Image (cartoon, rainbow, N blue to C red; front, side):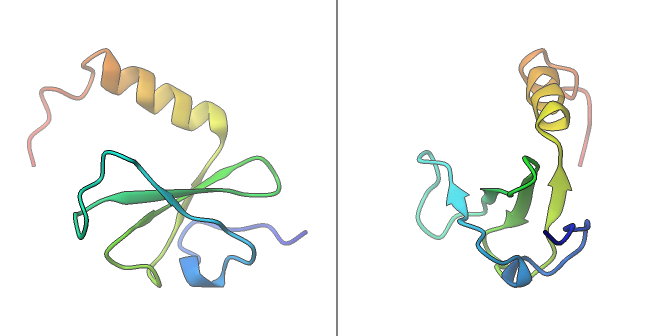
Amino acid sequence: MRQIENGTRSDLIEGARWTKSRHSAPGGNCVELAALPDGSIAVRNSRHPQGPALVYTRAELAAFVAGAKDGEFDGMTV
């Protein structure tokens, strides 16, 4: 099994089945997720399906989601 590195073009990740949130609007700016064979999760921008993917462990994504729910990022500006 080939290790998928951060920044790998998402269209080159063999067997990835990308999933978008059911809350996503058609044509919207969304992220898509794909479970990888090693248990990690790849994330890509739905508007750039050939663009780079970021790869996280399930624990890393769970920590991020918990932080977002707890408001840890509410003070950040873009």
